[in-house]
Amino acid sequence: MSVGFADKDTTAQYYQERGYIVDATEIGRAYYPSEHVRITGDIRVRYEVLPWVSRFEVDGIQPE
Image (cartoon, rainbow, N blue to C red; front, side, top):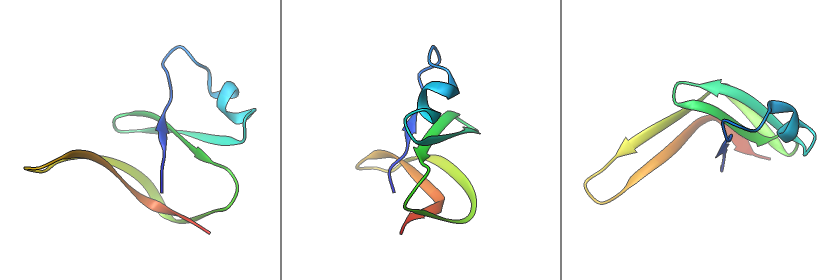
């Protein structure tokens, strides 16, 4: 599942008008589609650093 991080200068309303839900996370505001997703628990966005890659992982949301 892909999520994006909201620009600090862009309001939540901007993303909501385009069909996204905006939530605060530990590492900033994130947005994700409001349709065709299944919420499986608390949505958490984690930043992981592995020896070969740095990445964001998302828990609690899946595509339908």
